[in-house]
Length: 92
Image (cartoon, rainbow, N blue to C red; front, top):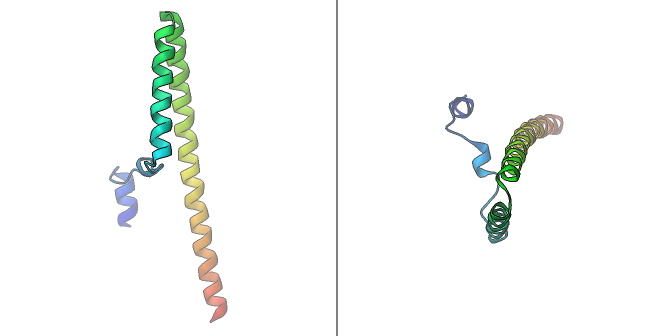
């Protein structure tokens, strides 16, 4: 039960470990930041507001997708555990 206690209290945050900081990932982050900065400098204030609104909504969608992926992964893990236990009992 300790796992669920830690998860509930925020001691475990699965999203923090979602992507390992590989060189490819780090490079992609830097490229995205550079492109975003360049775009922001070229936009009018009204266009910037639209861009920020779009980024906020995109972030919300990504958070929902990540939470669902975590839930489904957890369910898959539980199904695998059940299957392993069933196979072990059948082998006995």
